[in-house]
Amino acid sequence: MSAKPIAVVTGGAGFIGSHMVDLLLERGFAVRAIDNLIGGREENLAHHRADPDLVFEKRDVRSFAPGDALFAGARFVFHFAGIGDIVPSIEQPLEYLSANVQGTVHMLECARAAGAAKFVYAASSSCYGLAAVPTREDHPIGPRYPYALSKYQGEQAVLHWHQVYGLPVNSIRIFNAYGTRSRTSGAYGAVFGVFLRQKLAGKPYTVVGDGTQRRDFLFVTDVARAFLAAAQTPRSGRIYNLGAGNPQSVNRLVELLGGEVVRIPKRPGEPECTWADITRISAELDWRPRVSFEEGVSRIVANIDYWRDAPLWDPASIARATETWFRYLGERT
Image (tube, rainbow, N blue to C red):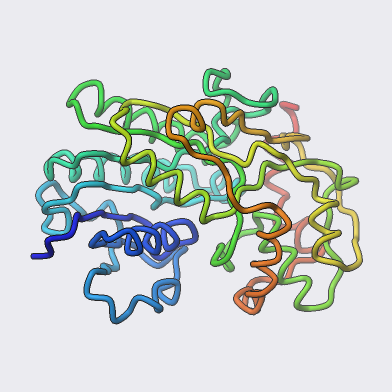
């Protein structure tokens, strides 16, 4: 039995989860990572393969029950596991609610049985819908598609376990995380994965509308630091918005990456700007972003080969992939 404090990371081979594993090992934790490898990649943890302080299990979080040995002695549980993307959630709402809500409940029960000192949940800013900016934690909730609903209901379960069972918890609503190891496969989704594959292929970037829309991009190592701070604080039952607090335009991203552009139609239900008000997390957890947007993009470009096997999108394939988006979200905007 390791004398080091134990942390469990669900989705530990995924984008944010693997960086969480990095940070925890660096800070002297013994880490138990869980991932079903549908979205995650085992190679994201390959640099820790010989580390005796890392245990990896390929399992779905819904397969765990209270008392599972993997959680024995766990001080912290970081819950990143789940499924993302807008269009697939519209097409497969049952799976999204099962994975993102019931999966969370399984992890809450395992953490409770283990007597964990803190459960930190990766929530989503999509719960706000089309929000006023900068967006505070007390902004009205308005999820517009099943993914957003499922992440919000997962958060409600987390806060409920705190209220009813006294489980120490905090929830972090992530705005626009980006960085190395972001997902390379699956549905049409986040702009970085799309643009990086297009850059590798020498193809034009598919920019939605005029490219002036802004996103509150936060580099993934800053995300991991925020989650550790939320675990180590004595505060509990808190919700924190997490972004850089400095939105960047898609046109600025294109400028940094360099290359030609092709315009595609604007999509219903997409905000012109996402912008986290980070006053609370800065004040209560003494957290601030460290990686500038320019530095973050530079780090990604230095590792661009990671996206070589990602889908290569063009206007026609994007139009096909987003038909459901226009059909179900268009009438309400």
